Image 1: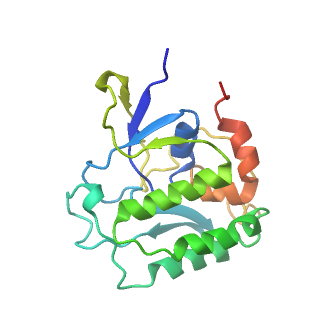
Image 2: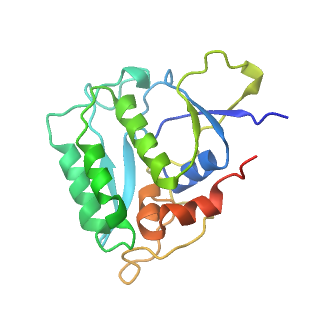
Length: 208
């Protein structure tokens, strides 16, 4: 029996739970027609600092209250947010065991300045796929896909409740000597602390 196709959101380096779900399913179709929703992971991710969690937000043209389809959302570049996000990641994770393996390619990624939010999110998805060394079958549209083969999946966690009532394996975080473990951060937190190979061992589906 063929595996169903998950129809879901694009996320900005999604939460660990979200990426875990994608990794455990081979086929995903991104819902690019879905309206942009404020306070979501579509343009936000949460990392950890010595002071606790920090939310990084991609600014968009027109503000956060618009209901425009995400495929039409335009990124605002009137502030140097790419440099700020990269600096925050470097400052927070320079002590992480695996950060140096990803730092250079991450700099290349953030050097891109596509006009559309989805184009940048797809670049992030491609980058993550390479680091996890997985052959994700990420479809960008659902053309020629049978409707009965699609299962809608929208991650229940948002930036406001990302670490509430969730059970995920713990790992050594960079500031574990200063703050308590923070669950379900951006997948980047786990990637820098654990490494892509170990994450793949945990959640990658077996090759058939």
